[in-house]
Amino acid sequence: MSTHDAIVFLFDVDNTLIDNDRFSADLAARLESELGEDGRARYAAIDKSIRAEVGYADYLGALQRLRGKESSPAYMALSFFLLDYPFDERRFPGVPEAIAHLRTLGRPVIMSDGDTVFQPRKIRRAGLWDLFREDVLIYVHKEEMLDDMRRRYPADHYVMVDDKPRILVALKKLLGDKVTTVFVKQGHYAAAAGKELEETPPDIVVDTVAELATLTREDFLASA
Image (cartoon, rainbow, N blue to C red; front, side, top):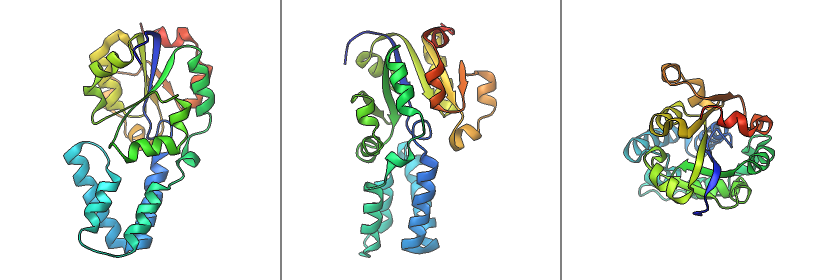
């Protein structure tokens, strides 16, 4: 892992590489199917509470807390739904081609937030574990783990590809011209982008990750 690279491309997962909004909609529909509208609403409230506590989505933890002391078979059905969800069908078009292109320029690495069980499984189910050749980092708050990331993947320059304006702004402020920020305009976080990107605009804006296959080394290093 400690090989020094000229460029390391850091990729978010949810709504950057895979359509996580579609997964969330499917989960909400399944919750309502198994537990009714009240069950879906209770899960949403628990999910919101856990996110506030730990800083990321803990789908399995929310389901466990929702179940409590109940013994309905519906919870087993929901467990299977989560663990067997076809995330490979939610991977955005053009991702393998984009990663293959970027590998000719540097080293693609996943840097995601998430829990220690479901998020790795999601990445593997989506085919991303193999696509990124096991170069995967999962943190609680990735913007707080830059020293660890740089120790594991030292490079002359970094490129952060993310749909969340908050992350892009944080990395630009922390790494300056050492990082090129790429804003992917997908998902609900991107749709809600506002003033933060006006104050600290991304270096590159794309509609999809597939567009990265058309960019050159010079495009990514322009901000440096």
